[in-house]
Length: 493
Ligand SMILES: C[S@@+](CC[C@H](N)C(=O)[O-])C[C@H]1O[C@@H](n2cnc3c(N)ncnc32)[C@H](O)[C@@H]1O
Image (cartoon, rainbow, N blue to C red; front, side, top):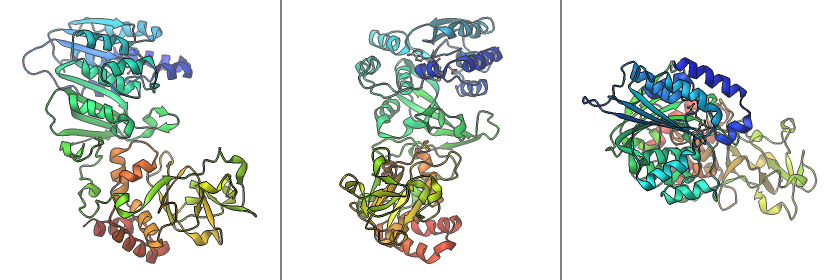
Protein backbone atom coordinates (compact mmCIF):
# COMPACT_ATOMS: atom_id res chain seq x y z
CA UNK A 1 0.00 0.00 0.00
CA UNK A 2 2.88 2.29 0.75
CA UNK A 3 4.01 1.44 -2.77
CA UNK A 4 1.11 3.50 -4.16
CA UNK A 5 2.08 6.51 -2.07
CA UNK A 6 5.62 6.01 -3.33
CA UNK A 7 4.46 6.13 -6.95
CA UNK A 8 2.40 9.23 -6.25
CA UNK A 9 5.39 10.84 -4.54
CA UNK A 10 7.67 10.24 -7.54
CA UNK A 11 5.02 11.35 -10.05
CA UNK A 12 4.13 14.53 -8.18
CA UNK A 13 7.75 15.46 -7.47
CA UNK A 14 8.49 15.13 -11.20
CA UNK A 15 5.48 17.18 -12.31
CA UNK A 16 5.80 19.97 -9.79
CA UNK A 17 7.36 23.24 -10.69
CA UNK A 18 10.55 24.08 -8.76
CA UNK A 19 9.03 27.41 -7.73
CA UNK A 20 5.97 25.69 -6.21
CA UNK A 21 8.18 23.19 -4.37
CA UNK A 22 10.34 25.93 -2.96
CA UNK A 23 7.35 28.10 -1.93
CA UNK A 24 5.86 25.24 0.08
CA UNK A 25 9.15 23.68 1.15
CA UNK A 26 8.15 20.44 -0.54
CA UNK A 27 10.56 17.52 -0.37
CA UNK A 28 8.84 14.17 -0.14
CA UNK A 29 10.22 11.29 1.91
CA UNK A 30 11.14 8.14 -0.03
CA UNK A 31 9.45 4.94 1.22
CA UNK A 32 12.64 3.37 2.63
CA UNK A 33 13.31 6.38 4.84
CA UNK A 34 9.63 6.59 5.84
CA UNK A 35 9.76 2.94 6.98
CA UNK A 36 13.02 3.52 8.84
CA UNK A 37 11.43 6.47 10.65
CA UNK A 38 8.33 4.45 11.55
CA UNK A 39 10.70 1.82 12.94
CA UNK A 40 12.15 4.34 15.40
CA UNK A 41 9.00 4.48 17.57
CA UNK A 42 9.16 2.41 20.74
CA UNK A 43 6.25 -0.02 21.04
CA UNK A 44 3.71 0.92 23.72
CA UNK A 45 4.15 -0.60 27.18
CA UNK A 46 2.22 -3.82 27.78
CA UNK A 47 -1.19 -2.21 28.40
CA UNK A 48 -2.90 -1.46 25.05
CA UNK A 49 -3.49 2.23 24.52
CA UNK A 50 -5.02 4.56 21.97
CA UNK A 51 -2.69 6.29 19.54
CA UNK A 52 -3.28 9.89 18.53
CA UNK A 53 -0.95 10.40 15.57
CA UNK A 54 0.09 13.76 14.10
CA UNK A 55 1.64 14.24 10.64
CA UNK A 56 2.34 17.94 10.08
CA UNK A 57 2.93 18.86 6.42
CA UNK A 58 1.91 15.38 5.33
CA UNK A 59 2.35 15.61 1.54
CA UNK A 60 0.86 12.45 0.03
CA UNK A 61 0.88 10.78 3.46
CA UNK A 62 4.03 8.66 3.05
CA UNK A 63 5.05 9.03 6.71
CA UNK A 64 1.64 8.29 8.23
CA UNK A 65 1.39 5.46 5.71
CA UNK A 66 4.67 3.95 6.94
CA UNK A 67 3.54 4.30 10.57
CA UNK A 68 0.20 2.63 9.81
CA UNK A 69 1.96 -0.07 7.80
CA UNK A 70 4.04 -0.93 10.87
CA UNK A 71 0.88 -1.03 13.00
CA UNK A 72 -0.89 -3.24 10.46
CA UNK A 73 2.10 -5.64 10.49
CA UNK A 74 1.84 -5.92 14.29
CA UNK A 75 5.01 -3.90 15.01
CA UNK A 76 3.03 -1.33 17.02
CA UNK A 77 -0.19 -2.41 18.71
CA UNK A 78 -2.90 0.07 19.67
CA UNK A 79 -6.55 -0.22 20.69
CA UNK A 80 -7.44 2.45 18.18
CA UNK A 81 -5.57 4.98 16.07
CA UNK A 82 -6.70 8.55 15.43
CA UNK A 83 -4.53 10.19 12.78
CA UNK A 84 -4.47 13.92 12.00
CA UNK A 85 -2.62 15.01 8.86
CA UNK A 86 -2.09 18.66 7.93
CA UNK A 87 -1.38 19.75 4.38
CA UNK A 88 -1.60 23.18 2.78
CA UNK A 89 -1.27 22.08 -0.86
CA UNK A 90 -4.70 21.15 -2.12
CA UNK A 91 -3.27 19.13 -5.01
CA UNK A 92 -1.90 16.51 -2.62
CA UNK A 93 -5.07 15.88 -0.64
CA UNK A 94 -6.53 13.27 -2.99
CA UNK A 95 -3.38 11.13 -2.91
CA UNK A 96 -3.14 11.52 0.85
CA UNK A 97 -6.73 10.38 1.24
CA UNK A 98 -5.90 7.33 -0.86
CA UNK A 99 -2.80 6.49 1.24
CA UNK A 100 -4.59 6.82 4.58
CA UNK A 101 -7.85 5.15 3.57
CA UNK A 102 -5.91 2.06 2.51
CA UNK A 103 -5.15 1.43 6.20
CA UNK A 104 -8.65 2.02 7.53
CA UNK A 105 -9.25 -1.73 7.27
CA UNK A 106 -6.16 -3.39 8.76
CA UNK A 107 -5.71 -1.03 11.73
CA UNK A 108 -8.61 0.32 13.83
CA UNK A 109 -8.15 3.73 12.27
CA UNK A 110 -9.93 7.06 12.24
CA UNK A 111 -8.21 9.79 10.27
CA UNK A 112 -8.74 13.45 9.63
CA UNK A 113 -7.11 15.42 6.82
CA UNK A 114 -6.76 19.08 7.71
CA UNK A 115 -6.36 21.34 4.68
CA UNK A 116 -4.99 24.16 6.80
CA UNK A 117 -1.89 26.07 7.78
CA UNK A 118 -0.35 23.93 10.50
CA UNK A 119 1.31 26.87 12.24
CA UNK A 120 -1.92 28.84 12.62
CA UNK A 121 -3.94 25.83 13.61
CA UNK A 122 -1.37 24.52 16.09
CA UNK A 123 -1.05 27.89 17.81
CA UNK A 124 -4.82 28.09 18.15
CA UNK A 125 -4.90 24.63 19.66
CA UNK A 126 -2.06 25.38 22.05
CA UNK A 127 -3.66 28.65 23.20
CA UNK A 128 -7.11 27.15 23.61
CA UNK A 129 -5.92 23.83 25.05
CA UNK A 130 -6.85 21.34 22.32
CA UNK A 131 -6.24 17.59 22.44
CA UNK A 132 -2.69 16.28 22.62
CA UNK A 133 -0.94 13.63 20.54
CA UNK A 134 0.86 10.47 21.60
CA UNK A 135 2.87 10.04 18.38
CA UNK A 136 4.07 12.42 15.67
CA UNK A 137 5.94 11.67 12.48
CA UNK A 138 7.01 14.53 10.26
CA UNK A 139 9.12 15.80 7.44
CA UNK A 140 8.34 19.48 7.81
CA UNK A 141 8.75 22.13 5.10
CA UNK A 142 12.14 23.72 4.99
CA UNK A 143 11.98 27.47 4.43
CA UNK A 144 13.18 30.61 6.17
CA UNK A 145 10.57 32.55 8.15
CA UNK A 146 11.04 36.27 7.46
CA UNK A 147 11.55 38.36 10.60
CA UNK A 148 8.38 40.43 10.24
CA UNK A 149 6.07 37.73 8.88
CA UNK A 150 2.74 36.67 10.34
CA UNK A 151 4.17 33.22 11.11
CA UNK A 152 7.00 34.75 13.11
CA UNK A 153 4.63 36.89 15.16
CA UNK A 154 2.25 34.02 15.81
CA UNK A 155 5.11 31.79 16.91
CA UNK A 156 6.44 34.46 19.23
CA UNK A 157 3.02 34.60 20.91
CA UNK A 158 3.39 30.90 21.67
CA UNK A 159 6.89 31.48 23.10
CA UNK A 160 8.66 29.96 20.09
CA UNK A 161 11.46 32.02 18.62
CA UNK A 162 12.77 30.41 15.47
CA UNK A 163 13.98 31.17 11.97
CA UNK A 164 12.81 28.32 9.78
CA UNK A 165 9.53 26.52 9.15
CA UNK A 166 11.09 23.16 9.97
CA UNK A 167 12.14 24.14 13.50
CA UNK A 168 8.78 25.87 13.99
CA UNK A 169 6.93 22.67 13.00
CA UNK A 170 9.03 20.56 15.40
CA UNK A 171 8.61 23.02 18.29
CA UNK A 172 4.82 23.23 17.78
CA UNK A 173 4.60 19.46 17.50
CA UNK A 174 6.46 19.08 20.80
CA UNK A 175 4.13 21.61 22.38
CA UNK A 176 1.13 19.47 21.39
CA UNK A 177 2.48 16.14 22.64
CA UNK A 178 1.14 14.39 25.71
CA UNK A 179 3.73 13.51 28.38
CA UNK A 180 5.81 10.61 27.08
CA UNK A 181 4.64 11.35 23.51
CA UNK A 182 7.11 10.31 20.81
CA UNK A 183 8.17 12.50 17.89
CA UNK A 184 10.18 11.26 14.91
CA UNK A 185 11.18 13.98 12.44
CA UNK A 186 13.52 14.25 9.48
CA UNK A 187 15.07 17.71 9.32
CA UNK A 188 18.20 19.46 8.07
CA UNK A 189 21.07 19.23 10.49
CA UNK A 190 21.54 22.99 10.66
CA UNK A 191 19.69 23.29 13.99
CA UNK A 192 22.44 21.34 15.76
CA UNK A 193 24.78 24.33 15.74
CA UNK A 194 24.71 27.96 14.78
CA UNK A 195 23.52 30.91 16.81
CA UNK A 196 20.14 31.32 15.08
CA UNK A 197 18.91 27.94 16.25
CA UNK A 198 20.00 28.34 19.86
CA UNK A 199 16.51 29.27 21.17
CA UNK A 200 15.12 26.25 19.30
CA UNK A 201 17.76 23.92 20.79
CA UNK A 202 16.94 25.24 24.24
CA UNK A 203 13.23 24.73 23.64
CA UNK A 204 13.78 21.21 22.38
CA UNK A 205 16.10 20.18 25.24
CA UNK A 206 13.77 21.72 27.81
CA UNK A 207 10.67 19.90 26.61
CA UNK A 208 11.98 16.57 25.41
CA UNK A 209 14.65 13.94 25.74
CA UNK A 210 16.65 13.01 22.64
CA UNK A 211 16.45 9.24 22.26
CA UNK A 212 17.92 8.59 18.82
CA UNK A 213 19.65 10.55 16.07
CA UNK A 214 20.20 9.11 12.61
CA UNK A 215 22.60 10.83 10.27
CA UNK A 216 22.81 10.34 6.52
CA UNK A 217 26.47 10.62 5.63
CA UNK A 218 25.95 11.38 1.95
CA UNK A 219 25.24 14.97 1.12
CA UNK A 220 23.56 13.97 -2.12
CA UNK A 221 20.60 13.09 0.14
CA UNK A 222 20.41 16.69 1.10
CA UNK A 223 18.20 19.70 1.11
CA UNK A 224 19.51 22.78 -0.58
CA UNK A 225 19.72 26.07 1.22
CA UNK A 226 20.96 28.90 -0.94
CA UNK A 227 23.24 26.41 -2.65
CA UNK A 228 24.64 25.22 0.65
CA UNK A 229 24.40 21.48 0.82
CA UNK A 230 23.20 20.24 4.15
CA UNK A 231 22.99 16.87 5.75
CA UNK A 232 19.67 15.47 6.91
CA UNK A 233 19.15 14.04 10.31
CA UNK A 234 16.31 12.03 11.79
CA UNK A 235 15.56 12.81 15.41
CA UNK A 236 13.49 10.72 17.80
CA UNK A 237 12.29 12.71 20.81
CA UNK A 238 10.23 11.91 23.87
CA UNK A 239 8.19 14.67 25.43
CA UNK A 240 8.94 15.36 29.10
CA UNK A 241 11.08 12.23 29.54
CA UNK A 242 14.26 12.08 31.59
CA UNK A 243 17.30 12.36 29.37
CA UNK A 244 19.34 9.16 29.20
CA UNK A 245 21.89 7.73 26.76
CA UNK A 246 21.37 8.52 23.09
CA UNK A 247 21.42 6.06 20.20
CA UNK A 248 23.34 7.38 17.22
CA UNK A 249 23.05 5.61 13.91
CA UNK A 250 24.47 6.48 10.52
CA UNK A 251 24.08 5.23 6.99
CA UNK A 252 25.49 6.53 3.74
CA UNK A 253 22.05 6.88 2.19
CA UNK A 254 18.48 5.66 2.33
CA UNK A 255 19.38 2.11 1.32
CA UNK A 256 20.61 1.71 4.93
CA UNK A 257 23.01 -1.00 3.68
CA UNK A 258 25.84 0.14 5.95
CA UNK A 259 23.78 1.07 8.99
CA UNK A 260 25.89 1.45 12.15
CA UNK A 261 24.45 2.03 15.60
CA UNK A 262 26.17 3.12 18.82
CA UNK A 263 24.99 4.31 22.19
CA UNK A 264 26.55 7.42 23.71
CA UNK A 265 26.18 9.13 27.06
CA UNK A 266 24.25 12.39 26.69
CA UNK A 267 27.19 14.54 27.82
CA UNK A 268 28.95 13.56 24.61
CA UNK A 269 25.99 14.84 22.58
CA UNK A 270 25.45 18.12 24.42
CA UNK A 271 28.52 19.11 26.41
CA UNK A 272 27.55 20.07 29.95
CA UNK A 273 29.58 23.32 29.94
CA UNK A 274 28.44 24.52 26.50
CA UNK A 275 26.24 27.61 26.75
CA UNK A 276 25.38 27.31 23.04
CA UNK A 277 23.85 23.85 23.60
CA UNK A 278 25.33 22.47 20.38
CA UNK A 279 24.08 19.01 19.51
CA UNK A 280 27.05 16.85 18.52
CA UNK A 281 26.58 13.74 16.45
CA UNK A 282 29.52 11.40 17.02
CA UNK A 283 29.89 9.32 13.89
CA UNK A 284 32.19 6.74 15.43
CA UNK A 285 32.16 5.05 18.83
CA UNK A 286 35.53 6.55 19.67
CA UNK A 287 35.28 9.53 21.94
CA UNK A 288 36.15 12.91 20.48
CA UNK A 289 39.96 13.10 20.67
CA UNK A 290 39.85 16.87 20.85
CA UNK A 291 37.31 17.13 23.62
CA UNK A 292 39.26 14.63 25.70
CA UNK A 293 42.72 16.18 25.27
CA UNK A 294 43.58 18.11 28.43
CA UNK A 295 46.20 20.23 26.63
CA UNK A 296 43.76 21.37 23.95
CA UNK A 297 41.57 23.77 25.79
CA UNK A 298 42.45 27.26 24.57
CA UNK A 299 40.31 29.73 22.67
CA UNK A 300 41.69 31.96 19.94
CA UNK A 301 41.47 34.83 22.45
CA UNK A 302 43.73 32.88 24.79
CA UNK A 303 46.36 32.46 22.10
CA UNK A 304 46.08 36.08 20.94
CA UNK A 305 44.89 35.38 17.42
CA UNK A 306 41.80 36.48 15.50
CA UNK A 307 40.11 34.86 12.56
CA UNK A 308 38.08 36.77 9.97
CA UNK A 309 36.29 36.11 6.73
CA UNK A 310 38.45 37.40 3.88
CA UNK A 311 37.48 41.10 3.69
CA UNK A 312 37.66 41.49 -0.12
CA UNK A 313 34.13 40.90 -1.43
CA UNK A 314 34.89 40.62 -5.11
CA UNK A 315 31.57 41.67 -6.59
CA UNK A 316 31.62 44.90 -4.58
CA UNK A 317 35.15 45.74 -5.69
CA UNK A 318 34.91 44.37 -9.22
CA UNK A 319 36.23 47.48 -10.94
CA UNK A 320 39.44 47.25 -8.89
CA UNK A 321 40.24 43.61 -9.64
CA UNK A 322 42.95 42.64 -12.14
CA UNK A 323 43.66 39.34 -13.79
CA UNK A 324 47.39 39.71 -13.17
CA UNK A 325 49.53 42.00 -11.04
CA UNK A 326 50.86 45.22 -12.50
CA UNK A 327 51.86 48.69 -11.35
CA UNK A 328 49.69 49.91 -8.48
CA UNK A 329 48.23 46.47 -7.69
CA UNK A 330 48.80 44.05 -4.80
CA UNK A 331 48.24 40.26 -4.72
CA UNK A 332 44.72 38.94 -4.21
CA UNK A 333 44.16 35.43 -2.85
CA UNK A 334 41.19 33.18 -3.64
CA UNK A 335 40.63 29.63 -2.33
CA UNK A 336 42.15 28.37 -5.59
CA UNK A 337 45.48 29.83 -4.54
CA UNK A 338 45.38 27.52 -1.52
CA UNK A 339 45.69 24.25 -3.42
CA UNK A 340 48.24 22.56 -1.17
CA UNK A 341 49.69 23.18 2.25
CA UNK A 342 50.96 26.59 1.14
CA UNK A 343 49.54 29.34 -1.00
CA UNK A 344 50.63 29.49 -4.64
CA UNK A 345 50.51 32.76 -6.48
CA UNK A 346 49.96 33.93 -9.13
CA UNK A 347 47.73 31.32 -10.73
CA UNK A 348 46.81 32.63 -14.21
CA UNK A 349 45.08 29.26 -14.87
CA UNK A 350 42.45 29.90 -12.17
CA UNK A 351 40.11 32.16 -14.14
CA UNK A 352 40.05 34.42 -11.08
CA UNK A 353 41.75 37.77 -10.57
CA UNK A 354 45.24 37.50 -9.10
CA UNK A 355 45.54 41.13 -8.08
CA UNK A 356 43.64 44.13 -6.77
CA UNK A 357 44.36 47.82 -7.28
CA UNK A 358 45.68 49.53 -4.21
CA UNK A 359 43.76 52.77 -3.85
CA UNK A 360 41.53 54.72 -1.47
CA UNK A 361 38.57 52.38 -2.12
CA UNK A 362 40.47 49.14 -1.50
CA UNK A 363 43.17 50.00 1.02
CA UNK A 364 41.01 49.42 4.08
CA UNK A 365 40.29 45.83 3.00
CA UNK A 366 43.95 44.86 2.62
CA UNK A 367 46.36 43.30 5.15
CA UNK A 368 50.13 43.84 5.34
CA UNK A 369 52.13 41.14 3.56
CA UNK A 370 53.22 38.50 6.08
CA UNK A 371 52.65 34.98 7.36
CA UNK A 372 49.01 33.97 7.72
CA UNK A 373 47.06 30.78 8.11
CA UNK A 374 44.11 30.62 5.69
CA UNK A 375 41.20 28.16 5.58
CA UNK A 376 38.84 27.61 2.65
CA UNK A 377 35.21 28.40 3.50
CA UNK A 378 33.73 25.86 1.10
CA UNK A 379 34.95 22.34 0.55
CA UNK A 380 34.02 20.56 -2.65
CA UNK A 381 30.97 18.32 -2.29
CA UNK A 382 32.67 14.99 -1.81
CA UNK A 383 36.02 16.23 -0.60
CA UNK A 384 37.47 14.14 2.23
CA UNK A 385 38.19 17.00 4.57
CA UNK A 386 35.97 19.89 5.60
CA UNK A 387 38.79 21.98 7.04
CA UNK A 388 41.56 22.70 4.56
CA UNK A 389 44.22 25.04 5.96
CA UNK A 390 47.27 26.49 4.21
CA UNK A 391 50.13 28.78 5.08
CA UNK A 392 50.49 32.12 3.31
CA UNK A 393 54.21 33.00 3.08
CA UNK A 394 55.29 36.57 2.35
CA UNK A 395 58.13 35.59 0.03
CA UNK A 396 55.58 34.20 -2.45
CA UNK A 397 54.57 37.79 -3.20
CA UNK A 398 58.03 39.38 -3.57
CA UNK A 399 58.06 42.95 -2.39
CA UNK A 400 54.27 43.35 -2.29
CA UNK A 401 53.49 45.51 0.76
CA UNK A 402 49.84 44.41 1.13
CA UNK A 403 47.65 41.37 0.42
CA UNK A 404 43.98 40.95 -0.38
CA UNK A 405 42.11 37.94 1.06
CA UNK A 406 38.94 37.20 -0.87
CA UNK A 407 35.69 36.48 0.94
CA UNK A 408 35.71 32.71 0.30
CA UNK A 409 38.71 32.36 2.60
CA UNK A 410 39.01 32.65 6.36
CA UNK A 411 42.21 34.19 7.57
CA UNK A 412 43.94 33.96 10.96
CA UNK A 413 45.78 37.18 11.89
CA UNK A 414 46.95 39.29 14.80
CA UNK A 415 44.95 42.51 14.80
CA UNK A 416 44.87 42.57 11.00
CA UNK A 417 48.60 41.92 10.73
CA UNK A 418 50.56 38.77 9.94
CA UNK A 419 51.44 36.11 12.49
CA UNK A 420 54.86 34.93 13.64
CA UNK A 421 55.91 32.34 11.03
CA UNK A 422 55.91 29.36 13.40
CA UNK A 423 52.47 30.25 14.74
CA UNK A 424 50.98 30.45 11.22
CA UNK A 425 52.53 27.07 10.39
CA UNK A 426 51.44 25.56 13.69
CA UNK A 427 47.83 26.69 13.23
CA UNK A 428 47.69 25.26 9.71
CA UNK A 429 49.24 21.95 10.84
CA UNK A 430 46.84 21.68 13.78
CA UNK A 431 43.76 22.49 11.68
CA UNK A 432 44.81 19.89 9.09
CA UNK A 433 44.83 17.00 11.60
CA UNK A 434 42.13 14.35 11.27
CA UNK A 435 41.16 14.93 14.91
CA UNK A 436 40.18 18.55 14.20
CA UNK A 437 38.22 17.53 11.12
CA UNK A 438 36.37 14.82 13.08
CA UNK A 439 35.61 17.25 15.89
CA UNK A 440 34.26 19.79 13.42
CA UNK A 441 31.95 17.24 11.78
CA UNK A 442 30.37 16.43 15.11
CA UNK A 443 28.73 19.80 15.33
CA UNK A 444 28.58 21.02 11.78
CA UNK A 445 26.66 19.45 8.91
CA UNK A 446 27.44 22.20 6.45
CA UNK A 447 30.05 22.04 3.76
CA UNK A 448 30.83 25.58 4.87
CA UNK A 449 33.53 26.48 7.38
CA UNK A 450 32.87 29.93 8.74
CA UNK A 451 35.02 32.13 10.93
CA UNK A 452 32.50 31.62 13.77
CA UNK A 453 33.07 27.85 13.53
CA UNK A 454 36.84 28.32 13.71
CA UNK A 455 36.36 30.47 16.81
CA UNK A 456 34.48 27.63 18.51
CA UNK A 457 37.20 25.01 18.07
CA UNK A 458 39.57 24.51 20.99
CA UNK A 459 43.29 24.98 20.31
CA UNK A 460 46.60 23.95 21.93
CA UNK A 461 48.45 26.76 23.74
CA UNK A 462 50.26 29.41 21.72
CA UNK A 463 53.61 27.90 22.79
CA UNK A 464 52.52 24.41 21.68
CA UNK A 465 51.34 25.77 18.32
CA UNK A 466 54.70 27.50 17.80
CA UNK A 467 56.59 24.26 18.57
CA UNK A 468 54.27 22.44 16.16
CA UNK A 469 54.92 25.08 13.49
CA UNK A 470 58.70 24.75 13.90
CA UNK A 471 58.38 20.99 13.57
CA UNK A 472 56.14 21.35 10.47
CA UNK A 473 58.69 23.65 8.84
CA UNK A 474 61.44 21.07 9.37
CA UNK A 475 59.36 18.40 7.62
CA UNK A 476 58.87 20.72 4.64
CA UNK A 477 57.41 18.89 1.62
CA UNK A 478 57.59 15.52 3.42
CA UNK A 479 54.73 16.49 5.75
CA UNK A 480 51.71 14.26 5.18
CA UNK A 481 48.44 13.36 6.89
CA UNK A 482 49.87 10.36 8.77
CA UNK A 483 52.68 12.48 10.23
CA UNK A 484 50.27 15.21 11.28
CA UNK A 485 47.97 12.69 12.95
CA UNK A 486 50.84 11.02 14.78
CA UNK A 487 52.05 14.39 15.98
CA UNK A 488 48.54 15.19 17.25
CA UNK A 489 48.91 12.60 20.02
CA UNK A 490 51.93 14.46 21.42
CA UNK A 491 49.94 17.70 21.32
CA UNK A 492 46.97 16.19 23.09
CA UNK A 493 48.82 14.79 26.10
C1 LIG B 1 9.03 18.54 3.16
S1 LIG B 1 7.40 18.23 2.59
C2 LIG B 1 7.13 16.64 3.27
C3 LIG B 1 5.88 15.96 2.87
C4 LIG B 1 5.62 14.63 3.54
N1 LIG B 1 5.57 14.76 4.97
C5 LIG B 1 6.68 13.63 3.19
O1 LIG B 1 7.46 13.29 4.07
O2 LIG B 1 6.75 13.19 2.05
C6 LIG B 1 6.47 19.36 3.56
C7 LIG B 1 5.01 19.47 3.22
O3 LIG B 1 4.44 20.51 4.05
C8 LIG B 1 3.49 21.24 3.31
N2 LIG B 1 3.37 22.57 3.94
C9 LIG B 1 4.17 23.65 3.75
N3 LIG B 1 3.78 24.66 4.55
C10 LIG B 1 2.74 24.19 5.28
C11 LIG B 1 1.91 24.76 6.31
N4 LIG B 1 2.14 26.00 6.74
N5 LIG B 1 0.93 23.99 6.85
C12 LIG B 1 0.73 22.72 6.41
N6 LIG B 1 1.48 22.14 5.45
C13 LIG B 1 2.47 22.86 4.90
C14 LIG B 1 4.06 21.26 1.90
O4 LIG B 1 3.07 21.47 0.94
C15 LIG B 1 4.70 19.86 1.81
O5 LIG B 1 3.81 18.95 1.25
